[in-house]
Image (cartoon, rainbow, N blue to C red):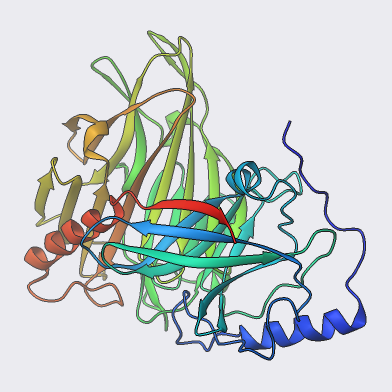
Length: 415
């Protein structure tokens, strides 16, 4: 069993706390700054002077010719401990970009996804230049804890806030999503910012921040799950499917995470249980969906998201480039909206259609995680694709798919 340092039992000294307060002030983000930005700590306030005693290098590689703007980078803590720092302390660390001897703080978030008091992943949101390796230095100290650095919250999540309402909702500053009896709907925002704390309001009417722009009805909405048992279609949404067990795993400042465990589905090959972990990242307009399946027997399962058919819709699907884009009319009073799914092309096993939605059949191996992405747009909101929207939205989705499907890698080295 790999060692996992316990949460530190002792506070830092008064002098160290004063220095850490300086670090927090240096890392403060103005409201308009991108999540990947930070402020320079400088030579006089080096990480060692701030109380950090150990360090290693994190290299993030973008192998593509594309600029990956505001790209979420998820760093597994287990990989750090297995490779460069077995006793890495997630309760006192900071990431820096070092240039010319000056240290610029990189805002990060450590998440405990299984709620055992040990962080499992660290998240940063960075713009990665084409064909580049971004080099960050992680400084840390065993046995102490660091107060949360002062940042602007750009992600938030919450569980149900009213009887028989949504099971949960999650958002970035650009987009907000909700789970409604297994269906996914989304809110349109008129400007960047967080809105879920303001609910409940009259969601179907326009508010100062925007409105609920998608009414899923009997469809899957924006990516409700379906399991295929041979030719039979088994929706995991609606009253007949039962409600998933939902838990908020992280609520910002850079990432919001909601996990939904669906009731077991009886299939010819055995019983299957689907779990989807939904993440919204700062400065990103999509939700990342991590789908896991437990099944008996342990063979591949066909499952995946479905997108609602919209009135007056334009549909573009490119299986080789891994996307499905829909543009049409949204909820009453909302005007036109866009729906999109981005999937790994190699995972796609086929599609199907009903009168109300289109499903994407993905091969999911039990015990493995399959990642895909969902996005929505509103003609009046911050995510508006520009005119003519019916043509511009598929092009934007295609560009987003190209960036999200880049195999970004993370490596660790001793400093």
